[in-house]
Image 1 (cartoon, rainbow, N blue to C red):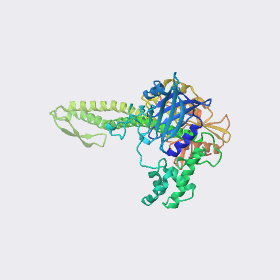
Image 2: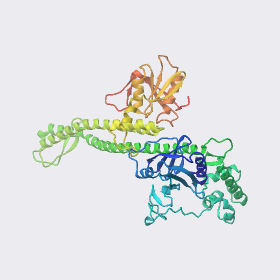
Image 3: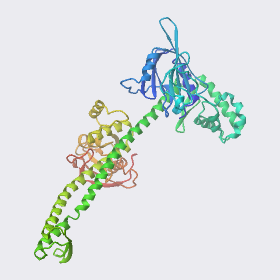
Image 4: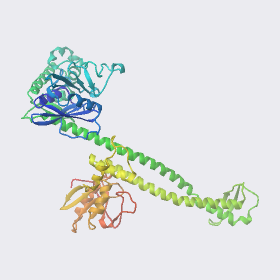
Length: 564
């Protein structure tokens, strides 16, 4: 991420025009790496977000809301104790570093100033928030570090605050490093490694804006250094803006009139989007891991079932052995023998060698073979039923895997979570929090929100998960509507709402292309899609969500496409 010293300076410049003199009203700590400070200034309320996670370290004003823990963490309680109702007197940075300093003051009953500082260091995995007294002694910090544990400085209560060590210089002294230019292969690496507060993303964008290349020459070096100094001057005038750049963001001089707090709110949108994406991916992987583990267990059971079925393949042979021994018992010697050859009257009287247990008589051997036959026969019936059940569950689990992989946002995953919870009594923790039963109940009462298309004047509804598929097919659709589904693959139920009109074959084909697109056959060039009237679609008793049988279907071959 490109949250460098220049970006922090732009944030601070905007904050100083809005928050100075503001009063701290509330303090929250939504997560272990994040603190929200509510400030009332100039008759408006602002929320200052301080994030010190290793991935999203940043500081900016936010309009996004987050749930807070029922019990405030210790550091949050300490901040409330020490700086609640304090006023912000100044906001600054130190030496172009990613260090935010918020000066705070409180007027006590004796009208004596009680000053404190909130220090926010935004340095990757070393990011931290510290509260200092008026002598720069640490009252406490969000994260504690000790030299006894290998840290290069102490970040502990009652210790003197020391700035992070740095061997970089301010860009204003760029002339002093001209003799080191030949040691580097690119301008971007030279600036990043030698000057404070400069990110590679910023330098690459500057190279593009100045229409130069990344080659290390004195002219290129001077051009970029002067551009940085010019931009720093415009930061002081609040004349810069944040822009998206190569899957990241950076600052540049504002080319048109800039909205107030543009940099702050750009960062709010940017990081909010990133956090939601990370939360979505974490949630999705969590559900996939649960389903994958269950699939693995059931596949192992199925393998055991298949082994038992192989044993049952001999049941007809054991019946034959028993019948032949019984039929020819009068010809067999009475003494115990290990095997005997008998004519198989089921196969042109060919001789068949039958092994015998020498410890028992031929008659008892016949009984033993009949017992094996009946046992395997009963086992075969039971195991065959078990195999069918396991195959159905594997098919259902694979459909959930498809749903999870096709999900687009957290709301989609919430619905899948509810389905898993209903199907498997799923009560494990989701991202460290148990599922909220009240929220679950509320969602259950809400109408499904399928994907909706309008094709040739007809409404087309597409389910996004198994529960929605059932809802659409058996509660929303009318009997004369047309139901579509990809053949032999997992996919969405697609409903063409006919309103008792007869759609053309071209409309049917368009719906089929959509059904193929919202399925596991998405990459197929020729997908087979079945369609039939909704009244011909039935749900077997005790079937899992989304599992149906259908009749009177027709099949079309189409290329998956959602852009009709």
